[in-house]
Every structure is written in C-alpha cells, then in structure tokens.
Image (cartoon, rainbow, N blue to C red; front, side, top):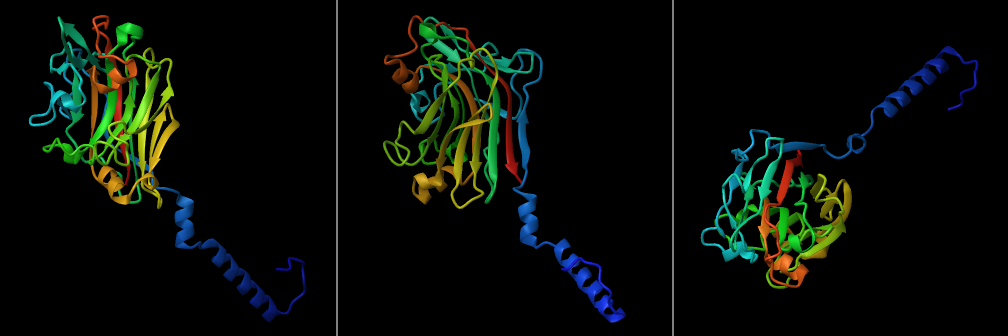
Length: 310
C-alpha cells in the first residue's frame, strides 16, 4: 500500500479506509494451525511424585510395594538376573533416613546378602498418543569403589505393567533402565530391553544401551531421567544425566510391533540395590560379590517424579 499523503475525494477515501480495516482484520486473525504452532507442544504435567519425607526408619509410603525374597511368586528365580541377595522389608535394608531420602543398604551376614527393592503401586505411567512421558529421580549411588564395590548394582528402571501376574513375558513388555551402575565404576548405563530373548531387535539379553561417565555419582546427587516422545511420526526414548541427553533409541530401530509392545502401554517404576548377577559379573569378569566386597554401603533416593503431557 502506498503510504504517501494523497488528496482523495470522499468516496475514494471511504473505500481506502474500508480496505485498510479489512487488511487489519485479516492480519489479526491467524489460522487455527498457526495458533497451534505458536502455542508449541503441550506442557508436561506431574502425575506422580515421591519426596521420601518422614521419620528415620519409616517405610517409603503407601504409593510403593516393597518386594521381598528372591523372586516374584511363580516367576524366574533370583529375579531373572542371577542377583544373589535376598530383599527384605527390614528398616536396616530399606527405610527413610529422616533427611528427605529413601536409603537402601546392602548388608551381609556370613555368606548371605540382604538389600531392598520397591516398585510403584501404579503401573499406568504411559505416554499418550502424540504426547510425552518423563520419569526422573534424584539419586546418589553407593560411595564405594574397587574390590570393595564388586557386586553392587543400584538401579532406577521400569517394567511394562503387563509383567505383573505373568512374570514370564519379559522382555517383550519392555524394560526401561533409566540408570544402572555396577561395581562402583564411575559411569552409568541407560538401556532398553524389548522383543525376544535371546537376540531379537534389542540384542537380548544385553539390550540396546550405552554408558556415560559420572565421576561424582557416588558422592553427590545427580538427576537421571528418561523421556518417551510420541509427538512425531518417529517415536523416541531418550536418556538424560543432569539434563544432558546421552542415549536414544527410536521406533525406526525396530519393527513397529516390537516397539509398540514395549512402549505403547503403562509401566511401573522400580528402585533397587542388587548384589551380584549377570551385569556386575560380566563387567568384573568374575562372580560377584566376593569376600572383599564391603557391606553397609547405601543407595540414596531424593525424589521420584513422573510427568505426562495432558
């Protein structure tokens, strides 16, 4: 439009004013698609949180199931991993520390190890169609290394809800290992388990995983998170340490049926401190724990948070 000042007759002026108003209305009413683009992705909403506040020696609360023994009733022995401890509900193995943390401690009595494991009552944590699921925790790993740490296996992970009551449908139902550490080494792993065992698209029993360095994970709290992103045509699982992505797996890495079976349903969250088993044994190159392994080291959990897009 020519913005210079011009002399016009009354009719011409009215026509010009009407055209200008029409242009303003057109500019001020963007399309619905443009409005959605400006709004961006839906925000995450917290649907579960545990802060582990309470008196020292207390159990973790009603949102959690305390696992005991050496396996689920009717399920694989040694929890399916070859781990050698017995889980208990005794406060010395599993309780609040009175400072806002859950403390899981591995103890030894002769040749017998005991420790703790919990899982959420809820098994419906899922990413909605076109949405995102984020699971996060603040954790400090057992502060032990070298021979004294052989066999220590702290973990923060999920299992597909359909595992409950079956116990033999792993790894097809999906397992998201958000954080694993073994033998006190200064690194942590993120792993996806899926498909069939052995082999399959997730290369079981190894899974699709990688590790990242973490020199202070045994002396400081760090934030560990996993996101399941279903906002695009290709879906992603992404692993984070202190907000930095270090691993991802996508739906393009396997057939659609395997991906859906592992991701397109609810999961429950677990936290445990195992002693010995296939993973620490494999990293150590020997059976663990050993006589040199020190009991009494603890795994501290500051909080657990689950967020979903609405």
